[in-house]
Amino acid sequence: MKKAIFLDRDGTIIEEKGYLNTPEFIRLKKGVIEGLRALQDAGFYLFIVTNQSGVKRGWVSRKRVMRINRTLVEILKEHKVFIKDIQVCFHHPKERCGCRKPKPFMILRLLKKYPDIDIKTSYVIGDKDSDIKLAQNVGAKGIKVFPDTDFSKVAKDILNK
Image (cartoon, rainbow, N blue to C red; front, side, top):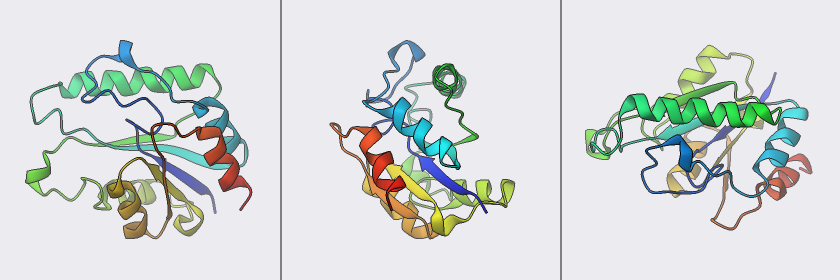
């Protein structure tokens, strides 16, 4: 069985920009390349699981969100960090959909697609309480990061457990 890291996008692996609407403003947070590479080298699958309600709010198009995600994946790939898959919830919070974090649908979809994942040895890493609640809802471990968190230290903590 494989371990997985389910990563929030904004505020976790890239700097929080409000509703990011252009790939030119992507800025990786401190230690992301080193931390993700170390986790990947230790055998973790890497996934991005992100709420992007800016689409329903009319602040960014769905096409633009997908372009931002592709650009982020390419930036990481240039550093030999490979994102296995991305799940996005485009719904507005008031829609009460099943995929908006902390609801588990996005991760459950990934678990169905990648049945070799052991959720009990996996982590959800994010900057919001909803990310930690998502971890609880799927039976994974949750790690909350903050604006000044060095992601390489988060990775070291995981690897030293």
